[in-house]
Length: 275
Image (cartoon, rainbow, N blue to C red; front, side, top):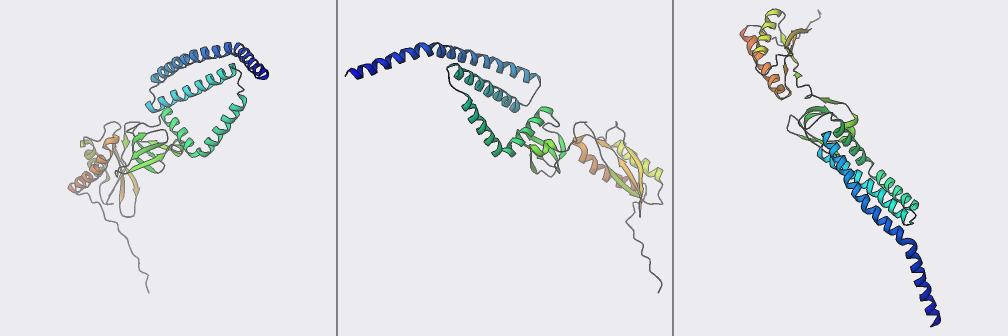
């Protein structure tokens, strides 16, 4: 009975001693935790305000704020644990090893994620732009942190991972607001090149979807086997590109026929050796 009383007495004494020793540390840790959370909220508001000024994508903005919040709170928790005497070295080693394992397992996804961040930050294109990349041409319908969605002229949906997209060549067909339409029209060797040029220029100048600036042009491209090929170069907005492409092709044929300028068929001359 006496041993039990001594054990209880020692336990109470140790509790009191530990309480006296750790109570100020715990109280201070609680104060730091409360103040730290308030500071983190304030920092998040400042980050959000700064990102609003850069007009970033909303998804990217939320992600950056969340990353900042996680990092700040992790630092706060580690600081609080150290204040109450918890050894954090082993904890940091475990977290580092876990992060490395997750990073290796998700290497492909993380590459796509990094590519998505680069695209959203530097904006080589935006939603609605017509681009050519990774062997595909289409309008950008969606940009998220892992993939970019294109809609091709054939109304096909193409999902392109952001990692190769951000590391490869991207041709933005929309950014300058104009596209040159490259057409080739062949006329007979007997035809008057000057007259043909005037006919084709008139066709382009009268088309409302052909831009005045830059001005359209007609030039001799090559002397082919069966025809003199003319390079017909109207400019159009990206939205009118195909209308101009098909429209000028059709109108050029009609106008050349009306001017009696021959568009020759391909001809092949066979030479027969004398026996």
